[in-house]
Structures are given as structure tokens and as C-alpha cells.
Length: 369
Image (cartoon, rainbow, N blue to C red; front, side, top):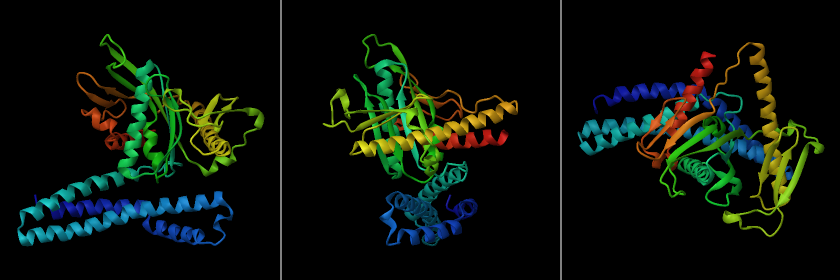
């Protein structure tokens, strides 16, 4: 294989150059310079909200540029490694070069998928909410399995995660959980995970050894600065305060700091309990509510346009993935056909293959439209 590597590496570098052009490295560098200047202003933190936006934007762009430059450096290093292996005729060096090429090929493929994320909000961070559905204890247990799956996925990638709210079930698992993934393109990446997930297994909570099917819903929304543009009259919301709770219904806070906001016209409910104070929880809940209302407005406008155009077809099915934990042991995406025969690794966060297939599927579906 060593004789073929230079040609394969040249092809990989050409693909990377295309990605580099799409990402716009020069534009990124200019934005980083401008944001760095703002971040260095002595009065930056006089306006904490504005400062947070500047530092977050700077961090995201630096992270994006670092991924590109790291691949560029690895491509150059691999060139040198291949040349060394050929000159020395050393099997160990050749094996190292081949292994690095395979690893780089996967990294470049991941970057290539990111270039498909060109939606209006794709580059933003994401807020993910998981809710248990039909299936009793199995459903709440499944919801907790999905929560761990996404948290492990984020951990694998080194993405900062903040769990904003967790509602524990009386039996096993959770009724719902909301968390934020603060990373570039987190929304575009995770948005293909939105939908209904189905679990089929022999229930560990029953005594009849019967197969149990349970469901959980995953919602993904972007973190948007524009959220403050949505005006929500005080009369349209009901605010309830309560004590944060832990597993088994135990109170984990001695004060009523948790906040639940209900938007009366739409029925949308947002809960927050992981901030230190009631004021912080209310502010966080309002941000998420404003984002959901803004997205709802845009969805209604898009639906109206489709209706006027005579096109009434949903782009996403309700049930998008099935997890089989009996017999065949399989996880299968019903939209893309992508599957894995190792559910254990999937639930441990190994979902990049599903995500990449979903992004490619969505892009091709939109292109056909």
C-alpha cells in the first residue's frame, strides 16, 4: 500500500483544499482578528451580555480555524512520514504512515460533512431536549440512555455541555432533560437527530420476558442571539417556581429556585433548574422560549409558502431511528438506511456515522426539492 499512498494523499489534499475554500480560512482569520480586538477592549465587561457574545463568537471561530490548521499540519507531516518510510524501507514507519492516512481520511470526511451545513442557523450552538414517550418505565429509562448517548458523544469531541434541566421519573430514568452543546456547528450537526426514537427490547422492568417497545422524542434548537427580537407579553406566559428535584423525587435545593414558564397561546413549556438562582433560571428559560417561538414562526411561514406552492410533503418522518436490543442487536436509521450492529457503542456516543449519513441525506433531499 505504501507505493499507492502518495497518490492517495494527493487526492485527499485536493479534497481538503476544496473544504478549506468553502470554509473561508482568510475570512475566518479576519473575523478572529476583529473579535480579538473587541475582546481586548478594557470596557468589554461593562456589558456582560455583549461580552459573552463576543467571547463565545471568538472561541467558536478559533476552534473552527484550529481544526483546519491541525489537518493541514497533519497532511504535511504525513508527507514527511511517507518519504521516511520509503527511504528507510522500514515496516513500522510504513505501518504508522498507513494508520495516520486512514485516520486523516476520516477527519477530512468529517470536515467535508461540515461543509454541507449551510443552513441559516447551522453554525450555532444547540439546545437539545429529550422527552420520554409511550412505554412506561422503559420509555423513561430509554430517555436517560439517549441523554447519556449525546453527552458521551459531546465528550468524545471535547464539546462543552451544560445540562440545563432534568425531570426525573418516579421509577427509572427521566421524564425529560434539556442541555446545551456550546460548539461551532453543534445545531447543524445535531439537528438531524431530531425526531422520534424507538427502542425494542426485553423489558428489564417486567417479569414476563416480553418484548417491550418504547419511545422518546428528541428536539434540537439553535442558540440564537435573535431570540430577544421575539416580544412575549407578560399576559401570554405563566411562571411557576418550585424546588429542584433529583432522582426518586428527592429535593436537591432548599429554595424555590427552579422555574417553569408556560406560553399560554401555544402551550410550549420550558423548565430550568440548574442555575444558581431563580432569576438566572427565569432568564435562561425565557431565552429558550423566545428561540422556540421564533422557530415556530419561521416554520409556519415556510409551511404557508409550501401550501401556496401546492407542495404539502414533510421532509422528516415522525419515527426516524430504531434501536433493537434483542435478537439481531441493531440500530437502524429509517431515513438514511445507515445501521450499526453494535448498539452498546452507539449508546456510548458512537453516533458520528448516523449523523454524517443524516446530514448527507438531508442535503440531497433539499437539493431534489
